[in-house]
Image (cartoon, one colour):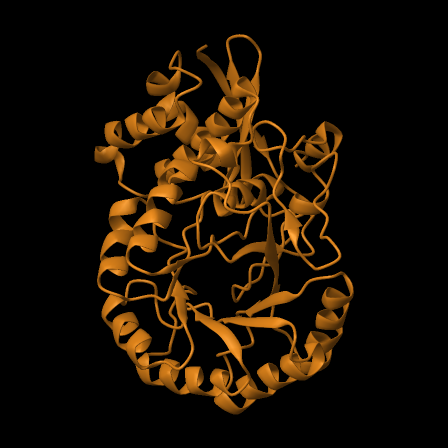
Length: 372
């Protein structure tokens, strides 16, 4: 079975605000899906955290390498693509595109084998996992109302991130965190993401340390992206001094980029994004490297239903996985599947058990979101 074609599906009209200073409009082009089509017509679907124009260019750039390749050897094919394009930029747009192709190949491989991807990744340590609802901070009254709705939907873990946290003053930051804890109560896990990968992030180690001490007072589960994403020295110091676990890594790609962060103890929780870091093949290698160094692994997942499905299968196949990120409300998660994800009565998300990623795209919704 060989790869005949790779089709790119644009996603427009349902983009969620990612927290950047200028925000995001629903029509913004941040994500795309790739559909790997085998010569017998069987397909696999992947997700890329990169706009569709770059994805289309990447697919065409890589065409001589993937066209006619084996459709049931995801690790070898994605590594071939990676090794063959180093001179065009290691870890950039092409790595993001490889990520989507790799996920699509795993989906296709699972369908051929009639097995869920989690089993092909090595076996299932769990059949369900706790999702954390991923939300932006906001003014206290708006934040409280949003948190109340999220808990009412059944979520038992919530991450709050980005503006206005860290953008005004430390007293206001504490007001936001106190509002969140008082709203959800003691039994809902709360996580905080400072968003230090924002352009021109103004804060350094001392701000991050003081803030981590405040977060500890409210039983916050981790402090994410407290520093700029290239400040490995700062993260090493912060992890050693912070009373709460330190998380990060969403902007890194390729296992080689993650290696020094894991080996030097810069993070308590490493967060590769399967739609950017190299796909399921590369994320699995990163997760096992983290496991061998007693570093927790939780996928970053500000993406689509396809990305979430990939995260679920990866979490099932890693011994110590704890959460998956669930961006909500998010049309590209909640409106593009024929059978959307559903939390169970305990706020857990089942791992799909049907072949491949175990999801089916709603083609009418996909066509609607492809419109300019």
